[in-house]
Amino acid sequence: MALNISILIVDDEESVRDSLYNWFIDDGYRVDCAENAKQALSILESKNFDIILADIKMPGMDGLEMHRRIKSLNKDSIVIIMTAFASVSTAVQALKDGAYDYITKPFDPDDLSYLIRNAANQISLKAENEALRNKVVSLENIEDLVGNSQAMMKVLKEVERVAQSNSPVIITGESGTGKELIAKAIHSNSHRKYFPLVSVHCGALTESLLESELFGHEKGAFTGAMFNRKGRFEMADGGTIFLDEIATISAKMQIELLRVLESKTFVRVGGNKEITSDFRVICATNRDLKKMVENGTFREDLFYRLNVVNINVPPLRERKEDIPLLVHYFIAKYCTSMSRDIISIDSAALKRIEEYDFQGNVRELQNMIERAIVIGNNKEIRVKDLPFEKDMISNSVESLEEVEKKHVHQILIKNDWNISRTAKALKVDRVTLYNKIKKYGLNLTK
Amino acid sequence: MFSDGHFEKEFLDKIALDIAQEYLFPVEVEEIHIDISDYYDPTRRQYDGNKLLKKIDSISSLEIIKQIGLFKVDLFIPILTYIFGQATFNGNTGIVSLYRLRNEHYGMKKDEGLLLNRITKVVIHELGHTFGLIHCHIPTCVMRSSTYVEDIDQKSKNLCIKCRAALGLP
Image 1 (cartoon, rainbow over the protein chains, first blue to last red):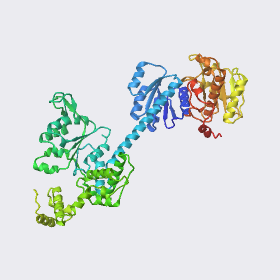
Image 2: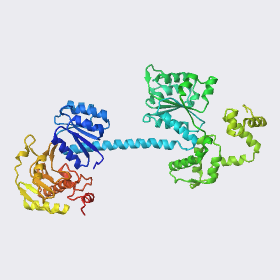
Image 3: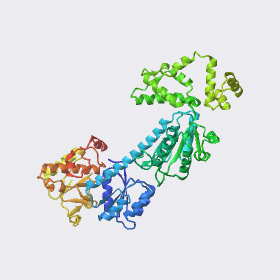
Image 4: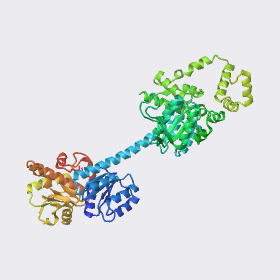
C-alpha cells in the first residue's frame, strides 16, 4: 500500500515492538525497531526514516527528549509519540515541540491505520511539492533565457556565479535585451528564490510616487494616503528588489537609496518607526552610469555601492546565432498561448529575420513573431507576414549613398558618437569612419 | 485448521472448502482442547493474541504447510484494543477469533450466514499473510485491510488477480 515509507519503532517493550512491526509489515511499510532512545539515535545517524513512532516513557532518555534530538538530525521526520499514560500536559508539550501527533496505547486499530495513512499522505505531498517547486524553478530558467551563443553563455555563467551571493548587481544593456529576465534568473537561482522578487520601474514614477512606492507610507502622510501601505523594500523582505531604469532617479532619491542600501533600514513616508528588511538589490539601466558619475548626474558613492557586480547583456545583433532558436521559441510560446498548432517558418523569412538589424533587440523580435502568427496563414510564417518587408521595399528606392549615410548616423548615435566603438561596429577603420562623417556632413546635432 | 472450543462440523467444513478453493491446498480440520487461561489478561479482560499465536505455532507438524487457529474469545495485542486475527508474516501460523465478528456483539440480530462469511474472509486474509501477501488496496480483494466488521463485509472472500499472481495461483 505504501511501499516507500519507512517507519522506526522505538519502545522498550518487546511485545509492543513486535506487534507494531507485524502490523506495519502487513501494510507493506519498511520497518525497523529500536529498544531505547540511544539505539534509535544511533540508527538515525546512518539511516533516515519517514515516520518515527516513539514511546514517551523509556528508561534513560524519554520520548520527548529523543524527539528534540531527532528533529536536530532530520527535521523532516514525522514523529508520533505513544504513551500508555495519557496526560494533557505531555501531549501539549509533544505537539509544541513539533511532534506530528500523539496516540494513547492501546490504540484502536482504525485510529492507528488512519494516523499512519495521514502521515504517509503528508510525506508524499511534501515530496510532490518539493518536486513541483524544483520543476517550476527549472522551467522558469529554461523558458526565460533562450540562447546558446558564446555571448549568452558568458552571461549565463555570470548569472550562475553571482546568484549564490548577496551582492548588489547592475545589469546593463540596450532596451529590449532582457535585463529583467536576467534579474529573474539571478533571483530564481539564489537561496532567496522562495521569497518575492519585487520589481520597480523607476522611470515610470515621479520622485514623490517613487518614494512612497519604495518606502511605503502611513495613513495621512499626503493627500490620498487613505491607508497605511507597505513599500517595495518591505515587500522584498527575504527576497530581491529589482530597480529598473535606475539612472532615472532624482538626486534626492539617490541619497535615500544609498542610505537604505547601507543600513537596510528605512522609515515609511509620514511614519517614525524604523523598519528593517533583508533584501538583495539588482538594478538595470541602458545608460552609461560611469559617464553619468563623471557628468555629476549620478552619485559616485551610490554607483560604487550598486556596481559590485556588473552583467552586460549583449544586444541581439551581437548574438545573431541565437536568432533561429529565439524564433522557434517564440513561435512555440505564442502558438501555445493562442491555442493553435505550432507552425513553422519558411527559410526565406528566417533568413530575412537573421539579416535584420534589431534595434529593439529581443523584444522587437518577439513582437514581430507574435504579429506574424496573428496575421499569417496558420501554417508557416512567410516573408510577407513580417513587418519590415514593406520598409525594405520602400527603402529600396533610396540611393546607396543615402542608405549608407543613414546607417552610419544610426550607429554613431547608438555608440554615443564614440568613434572607436562605431568603427568597430561598422567593421571599418577609424580613418574610414572620419571620412564618411565628413563626406555626409554628419554631426552630433544632426 | 485447529478449532478451540465447540464449532459445528458443517460450519468448519464450509470454511475449509473455501480455503482449499482459494489456495489450492488440501485442508484438514482438527478440534483441539488447550488451556488458554494462561493467555488471559485480567486488566484488559481479553486474551493475548501474540502468546496464542506462539502456542498454535508450537503445534506444528511436518505434514502441515500452514495452520490457522480458530477461537471464540476476544483477542488483543499490546498495542491494539482488539484484533480479528493475526498471522506470522511469511511464517506458518495464524489465529482468528469470531468474538467480534458476531452481529450480536454490535447489538444486531444474529446472522449465522454472515458470521460464516466473515470468518472465512478473515481466515483467508491471515493465511495470505503467512504466504507473504501484504495488504492490498483493491476494495474487493480479501487482502484489503479491515479494522471494522463493516470493512470485512465490503470485500469478497477471494484474492484479486494481482495477489493471486504474486502467489503463482491461476
